[in-house]
Image (cartoon, rainbow, N blue to C red; front, side, top):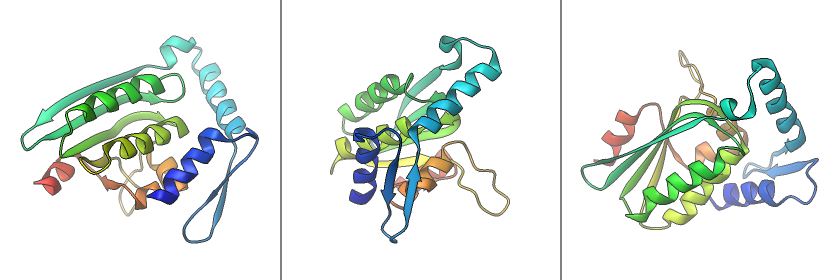
Length: 175
């Protein structure tokens, strides 16, 4: 997880916004272009014809379950505009130190690098007291991947976080 955390920190603290290199454990290097990401987001806004406010909607729902398990459902788009909401919800969820926090990204329409940063920050904040699990559909035989899957796979975070296809699978694994 430390490698992934360092990669995301590099992404967030890059002095050169034109290029970020992610060095993975397997020795491969992936090049991320934040300017390209921002341009894609702008094109998405132009294509919808909607204003900034309506395009960046995020609905967050926190539910507590037996055994000290919390489930945070994230619905909408996770980007720089909605990042403060997600960070606040993750922090609030971790305040009570649940044994496991399941972050349900199955209803996310867009998941950018800001979302990855929030997950890494939550993982660090959870430290020893809370296990973080992520719900998103990773690509596979007969499976449709979710918008959160691509950034998780591109950074290798899916190897460091517990990833499940459904909330039920995540809850079953923690009992």
